[in-house]
Image 1 (cartoon, rainbow, N blue to C red):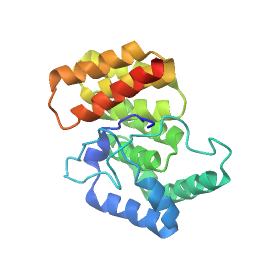
Image 2: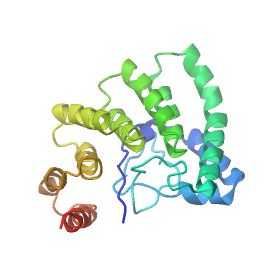
Image 3: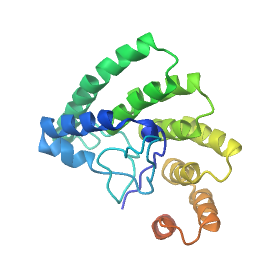
Length: 226
């Protein structure tokens, strides 16, 4: 079981029509692309301010902890990733034009980041999350999203820095705690530090809907260490 970081950010701000376009475009490209896109977050429960859910989320593992393109020399996976990136470019084109004429639209920048994240174009996702945060630095969910994008593109220390920043302002932010645990475990081989973060979540809500999943992650990390 490979755990991936949780994104719990501006998906909550995406409008319903934008997500309908995302899902439709991915289905049109190939069934394989759509099948890969259904891999969703372990703890992702975010909905947008408009009530729109993120596209194609499934129970199970969370976001990619390593870059998606050709990790193991898999040409098929590389082709799928390129197709997803092409679909994302088509969807974000008009949005990027709109952002150019409305450069202070933090929500729009984050929405573009979300689309690129879901296409596993993590560097581009991080770029637009950073644009959003340059406009509104206090949006902690977007900062968590930025951290997961950085981590997924192999930028371990910058991801930790962003999560630490969130937790300085909101020490009980479960998304940041869970993700920081994953970065410590997968990125730093710091099982003790990871477990401490996850146990902090359980202390807050030991009977929460995701408590069993968190305990399973703790068990997996602990067993791997031994």
